[in-house]
Amino acid sequence: MLRTAIHWFRRDLRISDNPALTEAAACGRVLPIFIFDPAQEIGAAGRWWLHHSLTALNLQLGGALRLFIGDPQEILPALTQQHQIERIFWNRILEPQQIRSDAALKKQLQTAGVEVRSFNGAHLWEPWEALKLDGTPYRVFTPFYKTCLTLSPPHPPSPPPPHTEWAEGNFGGAPLEQLGLLPNVRWDKKLEPHWKHGESAALDQLNLFLKQGLHGYKTGRDFPARTNVSRLSPYLHWGEISPHQAWHAVGKSLEDANHFRRQLAWREFSYYLLYHFPDLHEQNFNRKFDRFAWDSNSELLLKWQRGQTGIPFVDAGMRELWQTGSMHNRVRMVTASFLTKNLLQHWHHGRDWFADSLVDADLANNCSGWQWVAGCGADAAPYFRIFNPVSQGKKFDPDGAYTRRFVPELADLPNKYLFNPWEAPDELLRQYEVILGKTYPRPIVDLKNSRQRALDTYRVL
Ligand SMILES: Cc1cc2nc3c(=O)[nH]c(=O)nc-3n(C[C@H](O)[C@H](O)[C@H](O)COP(=O)(O)OP(=O)(O)OC[C@H]3O[C@@H](n4cnc5c(N)ncnc54)[C@H](O)[C@@H]3O)c2cc1C
Image (tube, rainbow, N blue to C red; front, side):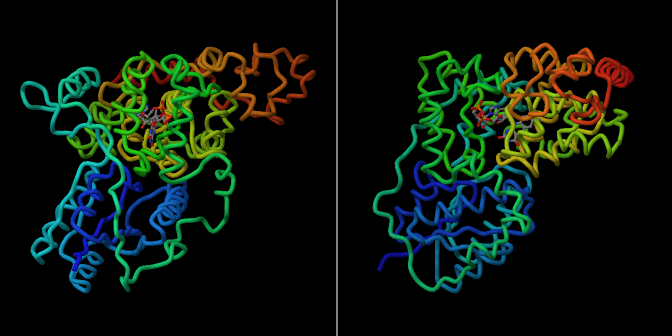
C-alpha cells in the first residue's frame, strides 16, 4: 500500500519547481494541506490575495487541498497521529518568527516519530552561504551580490512532480470561506480588475513581461507609466512562481536581463538581512537613529495614507496603492521619503500602512525598503538624499500620464504645473477649474522648509 506524506503548502502555492512537493510526491501519496493561523499577521490586501490564490491552487489540485484553521503546532501532530502519517514536507520561510516556530514544530513532530523534511523553495541562495571573509554577514548589497555570483548558480526550475497521487479520505478541514480572508465591507472589489491569481497567472505574467517589459527594463523600470516592470512581486511573495523560474526565464545575455536578476537579488538581500539581523523589522538597522526626533502627527499621516497631501506625485502613488493594491517602486521611494523626511513620521507608520495595503506585502522587502528610504537601513540612501517629489515627477513621469491617471482632478493642467499646482498662476488654475483647497488640496507642507527641517533634525544625531 502507498504511504501518505503531507505536503504543507505555505508560501509556495505552486506545483512546479517546488522542492518539498517533489520530494513528498516521490515518497507516495500526497496529502496537500494549508493551515491558516489567525495569529499570523497578514495585511488586508494580502489576505485578499491569499483567498484567491488558495482557490486557484485547489482547482489546480482537482479539489484535493485541505484547509485547516489554527496553530500548526496543534494541527499537525493531531493530523499525523489520527491518520498514521509518518512524513511531512515543507518549504522554509526565512522570517524570524517562522524560523522559531518551525524549529519547535519539527522537534515536536520528530519526537512523535514523524519524519520532517524542509527545503529551500523561495531563495536563489541560502542566507548563510554568502559571508565576508571574516565570517560575518554583508551589510552592503553590491559585495553581497558579487559573492552570490561566485556561489553555485541558482538551479534551473524543475517541472511539477509527475503523476502525483493526491490522498483521498476523511482528513477533516474547513471550507475556504471559514478562513474569513475576505473583508466584510467588500472594498477589495476594486483590486479585482488588476490581478489574476495562482501559478498559471504567475507564469502568464512572467511571459507578458518577457514579451513587453524586459526589453528596456534597465531604464524603463523607473518610469511608472511604462510597462517595463514585471509585477511579479505578489506571486513571488506567495510562491506562485519561484525566483528560479524568473531568474532563468530572462536569460543572461541582455543587460536588461542582468538588471532584472539584480533586482531579484535585492529580494535575496532583504531576506538575508532579516535572517542575520532578526529584529530588522522592528529596530533601526543603524542604531544611531534610535535617537532621531521623529514627529508624531496623525492628521498628516492620514492625509498621506489617503493621497491627499497636495503633492501630486505623492498622491498619485498613495492612490495607486489604494486602488490597485500596488505601487510602482520609484513612487514607493518618493512617497516613503516624503513621509519619513518631509513629514518626519516614523518609518514604522509607513511600514504598517504598506503591510496592510500592498498585495505584495512582505516582511523582509517592506522593512528593508522602509529602512533604506528612511536612511537608517543597511546600505541605505544617505539621509541627506531627500527625494523632491516635484522633480521626481517631472523626471520619471515626463508626460504626466501616471499622475493624471491617479489624480484626475489635475488631469487637464499643463505639464509645467502638474507636479506643483501651487506655483501655477491663478488665472491658469481658474481656466482648468482647479481650486486649491477645494478641488485639490493645498500642499500639507512646504517642500523646501520641510526638507531643511529634516536635515537639521538629522544633523544632531
Ligand atoms: C518603502 C518600500 C517598501 C517596499 N515594500 C515591498 C514589499 O512589501 N514587498 C515587495 O515585494 N517589495 C517591496 N518593495 C520593493 C519593490 O518596490 C517591489 O518589489 C517592486 O516594486 C515590485 O514590483 P515588480 O514585481 O514589478 O518589480 P520588478 O522591477 O519587476 O522586480 C522583480 C522582482 O525583484 C524584487 N525586487 C525588485 N526591487 C526590489 C527591492 N527594491 N527590494 C527587494 N526586492 C525587490 C521583487 O521581488 C520584484 O518582484 C518596497 C520598496 C520600498 C521602497
